[in-house]
Image (cartoon, rainbow, N blue to C red; front, side, top):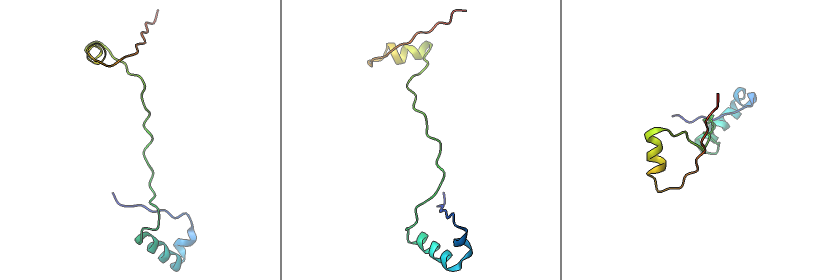
Length: 74
């Protein structure tokens, strides 16, 4: 991935001296990188376990588990 730098001022793009200064800052690593990051991943605090997966992850495990059992009544 190539590096991306950002300048909000239109004056820098239209003035040759300021544009040269911008390029020199980039080449000397004096300018911070700019990029749009990915959305933060949400941390899951719960999981839905059923069948064999439930046996492997809860019953056969040595770790403690907190169970919430839900049964909708129609």
